[in-house]
Amino acid sequence: MKYIIAVIQPHQLEAVREALAGIGVQGLTVSEVRGFGRQKGHTEIYRGAEYTMQYVPKVKLEIAVDAAIADAVVEAIGNAARTGHIGDGKVFVLDLEGVMRVRTGEMGAAAL
Image: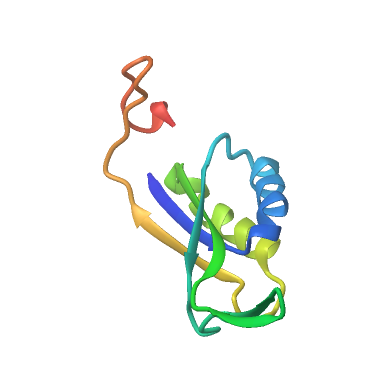
């Protein structure tokens, strides 16, 4: 099993969700987060004053999948979230040692 964490631009969320549904991903967790990378934040004008926003709003997706489809999930996220501009995001893939479905007590891949 693999645990995939993706940090993407908020306006790309729906395209990524549709791409994941298209390959059979049945669930994911979405969090609104803030951060910066190479883009180092941005400036905004509010009521005539310019402010530097050091952290850029992003969306973090967390997905647990069977190892057999992990590469397809990463590819789907990348294709759907890519705009070609700085700040498109990152995808991290980690080994997932175990999982339990609380409702039924199922363990391992059956719980996904």
